[in-house]
Image 1 (cartoon, rainbow, N blue to C red):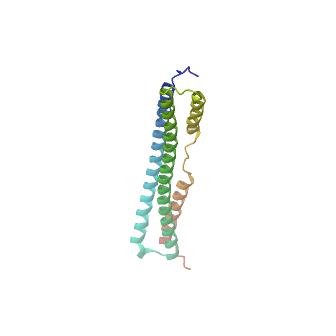
Image 2: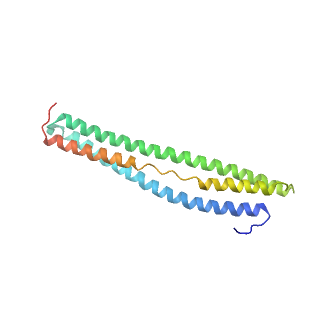
Image 3: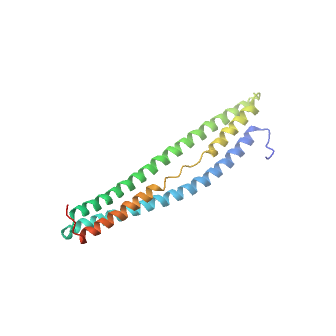
Length: 177
């Protein structure tokens, strides 16, 4: 461990700056991955919507209305799951960022209080408080970034494939209930 100055303002500023740089890099990478996942979901939902719409334009050629309705239902379910995934992703991101910002604000307030005490030469117990704040800062970086469950994407894709399959089969298979 580096030998930090005894002045807590210098030590706190250095640690905060390093922590913020690390967190910024992690946040940027997380944001890029999240954007790619959401783009994939949007593309999949769009493709599902187009195919579902084309299915209805050819309804006169349907041989099995039951298979047609089941296929369209699967496609609509895939679209709903995709939209739910996108909504859940945004809500989770907002909660995560708010929680992190609140923790950082709390630690920053404590550090500002320490600087004030140092400026007023009230240094008794300052070292213990500094260690406590350093531990709290470390705890923020121990929290893992939750990654969206990949099963959402698999579920959307399965609805897409099965819906398309039943939709196509409804045009060629004569199956009456």
